[in-house]
Image (cartoon, protein in one colour):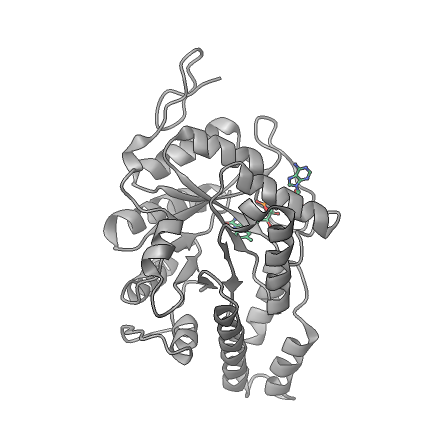
Length: 333
Ligand code: FAD
């Protein structure tokens, strides 16, 4: 089956439409090069807003980060109906109404090939050229059983090829410092990452981690397995912990418990009265993220990618601690 327009409608016998209208926008790798100077580039991840209030909060963070010149910003993707439409619209607005370079996450969950092509078409129509291709997690329970859509793809590798075939897109993929939770072992995890890169991905962004050694070992593993693919940027993802609630969120997102040493520091700051000691917990969380970021810089990471949960303050504090000359707007959250 082939598709004849930006929305991906099927027309038997016609070649798939490609989307050349996005050329001219830099790729993530080009942007990393352009932003590499005295300081290692940084980038941030946003989440789709669920309602109008959340959208207003997102835009406050967007405008604050815009003044700080990240190399790129990424927008996560959830398969659910109305959030999905808002995600596509807001990601398009990032391309059209800001100076930022947006990367749209695209997941295969609950989507047929036609729907995936249509989504890529929508992104292309709003000027988005950079796509982070992911398989996605089962909605509701990230650790639940993965169900392939009957007309969809089984693995991200396949989707990388499809997006590349659709036009002039630049593709990144996910990598996993401790291995993906479904991978039988680290060797096969490394082989699957190499396959995604070989399929045409230009870089990977890691799952968040709290022990820099895990990132360094991933980098060594892929370089040893495939020196060519292993030379592509592996962008480490960091999440500054700002509360004990964020600890739970971090563990849910990465599907693993935080290292004991990190938990000990946070619990010590919380003491017997976590409600009274929230500022102390936050301070330690920012300190941990700063230490990790500094180590990553020292180890030659190509970029620091921050999970922001749509707030600018914590990331700004970490960057300030690292000596970045950030000139943020007055920060409200
Ligand atoms: P894949 O690369 O397809 O891997 C999935 C599993 O299959 C792995 O265990 C892998 O080892 C295995 N595998 C891969 N290829 C093969 C093969 N050929 N044969 C057998 N096994 C194979 N989720 C969202 O829903 N929305 C988001 O916006 C989102 N953003 C993310 C951003 C980052 C930086 C990261 C790290 C993750 C993100 N995720 C997101 C989560 C991600 O979708 C899940 O971790 C998902 O379970 C794996 O996605 P993947 O693209 O790595 O899948």
